[in-house]
Image 1 (cartoon, rainbow, N blue to C red):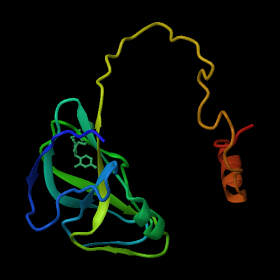
Image 2 (tube, rainbow, N blue to C red):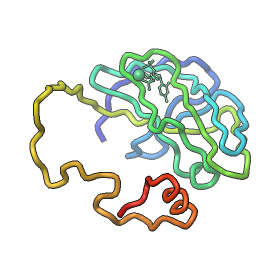
Image 3 (cartoon, rainbow, N blue to C red):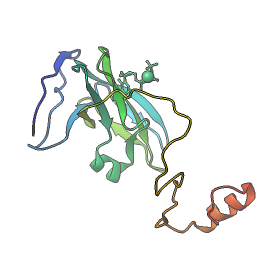
Length: 167
Ligand SMILES: O=c1ccn([C@H]2C[C@H](O)[C@@H](COP(=O)(O)OP(=O)(O)OP(=O)(O)O)O2)c(=O)[nH]1
Ligand SMILES: [Mg+2]
């Protein structure tokens, strides 16, 4: 895997730096600098103890970790969080406990998310009168099918609002 040098400033000298757990990993794990308890459905912002200077043309994306997501329902509210190349503040993570029943206790130093560094392009937006025709056209939001059948409560809710079901 190719690499790019990213300058990093440690704001909390005691927590581990972002690190790739295995060669070939796309995401470098980020840790929380604070202890936090998230009740069911609750969210909270934690620091990671680092600030970075991404080169122009790059961005960082803060993704959830799948293990904690599957085991405990932990995710990132704004997944993936976007770290701009000009940002020099501490990388923070807006965590959410999606478990409907159990609170989730996180301890300083726990690896709670992962940072994926990617090249990004700036679009040059060019306004036109009409866009070219394509096979997909304006079909989206399940237009190709293959999604699960809505359950009874969802159907009842959508019947009440007249939204959300497909004809
Ligand atoms: O998960 C995240 C997302 C963002 N940021 C920081 C870095 C990013 O460069 C900055 C702004 O993020 P974003 O553009 O997503 O937030 P905004 O609500 O649009 O704020 P702003 O008006 O500052 O752009 O906040 C984080 O530390 N963690
Ligand atoms: Mg913004």
